[in-house]
Length: 256
Image (tube, rainbow, N blue to C red; front, side, top):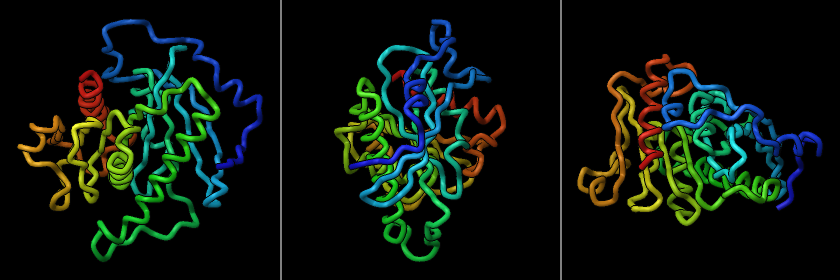
């Protein structure tokens, strides 16, 4: 699959260099610190010629020169790929190269609001899966040392639905999945990849989306309820206390 990159060779070469100020080594507390240093970022304008679709991406670089693992971040409906930096910075601090994908374009049809969401929104989720696979392919081509076979998937709401569909269809590529309150796409009932879903205090998932207590125990799936965080608070606009709580849950999951 060919891609047109709206970046010059010089920019891409610069992107490969490790961060000039790596984090001090320590017992990982930095992953849940109230304020994290901002990771170095690079913007890519990818183009999938097979689908004739632009796929904008923001990369958050790890502050290490060790081999990095790819994390794919998917925003919620109506959101932007720059709106989850509090989590992207955390993952970069943990050694991931984070690719935050802009799934929605101005020319896209609105997300259906009538009918069975699991049916009428499936094409949107499938497009999101194709976006994620395309970004994985292109980054592997650009950065051959990048680990793209143990993906970390992170998505909010509709982006979480996309992440769960990718995990269901391509479990061999995925190591961990984190959903911020996805409500429509059922969590795959599988032991691998490992799955965490963080639930809001105001929205309820559709029937069958969340695993039962018995399924959670048998498959090692984690469902964490936040008592004071709304569905629409799960982004950079959250309070610092809310961000801290979410980051703490994510950090604990990454250490498992």
